[in-house]
Length: 324
Ligand code: RIB
Ligand code: CA
Image 1 (cartoon, rainbow, N blue to C red):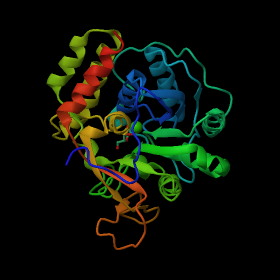
Image 2 (cartoon, rainbow, N blue to C red; image 1 turned 30 degrees about the horizontal axis):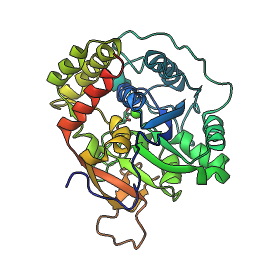
Image 3 (spheres, rainbow, N blue to C red; image 1 turned 45 degrees about the vertical axis):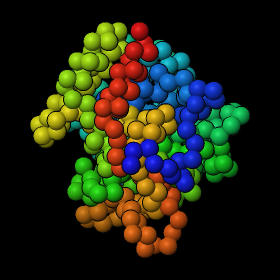
């Protein structure tokens, strides 16, 4: 049933009291669309953005973050994340997002230069300065979030929730067992999933249903403002890779992590105990969900499973209209 209840995701953003959030991503076409959605919502108050090494090198994802923020008028601090995962070599997804990491439409140059300190430090400063706990929205590998938890354990209580895109209970997409974000930095993911911070996990189980069809690209393009035209262009580029794999549309994975905060009614899922596999020849990076509750461990994540696709597309159309 869409819109079911969770004991883990126990709040929903409202316009009366906007929720402070931190965006952490590896833009990346779907990260970019997630940031468009977040920027368009009055229920969310973006405190800062941080780039992470994932879809492309940290230099490219940081540059892309700056360009997206300039396009969206997102006037908040930006920090560059670590140059590589905690203990492993980077894996990039240039086959999906192109050599820039955000191939396709022309974008403005960044307005803000990244702050002269780390992503973990910027996150920590935002948590310290916030007068209420903050929701972190990671849409790439969890390197920065894990670094924050390792370097500033005293700030864990200022993290209200983590609504992340990553993992997949039923399957992977970069290996048969592992989804890209978790595979790139499984050690960081383990730190986050073992942190006792409430997590909403937008894994492949739900995000591969968050499909935007070519006819939807035209709906978005028809809105006609600069952001709408760019989002339509991002969708077209992002769809190329997926069309070749037989997808009927572009799976806008990362936007589901934001959707979970503002429209939980179009989603459903299950509270599960999730462990991250950090070793193994075949299963490194797998998010292993205790569906039959055999571990005896309490659930640590609200794992999303279904989405109302039409309502999701309507949400994206509404989002680009904001920039009219
Ligand atoms: O597996 C999908 C995830 O990997 C998305 O976050 C996409 O941007 C890539 O980072
Ligand atoms: Ca991403």
